[in-house]
Length: 133
Image 1 (spheres, rainbow, N blue to C red):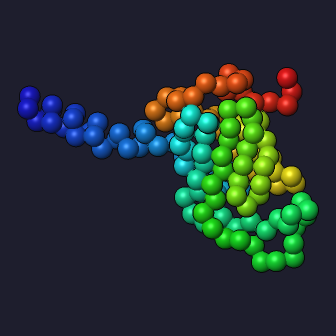
Image 2: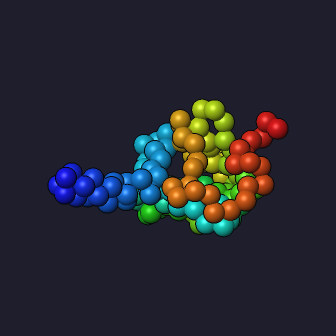
């Protein structure tokens, strides 16, 4: 009896970190971890992501790509922000969700945003951002 109880407790403790962390894979194959705060979602790449530097006029400069950990902020009112890509928007659909920055689109097929430990904010849109309202 003691052994089965100990095994059950150990199993729960081992799986808690897995349950508390949500992972999303982009259409390009990059893996992101999700965290939430009062302003919305934060996706942080597990590995460095290569992106071309965007100049201040919205075009792409002929430079080598920036290769670094990528952090994407998704707001509760469908706004998005990335330090490298600037401001954008995000949308949800039955097929997943998409983040749009000027001319850069980052798709997350078959993904639905859910905070690992429950939502910590109020949605402006019931959590379903869409241009097709």
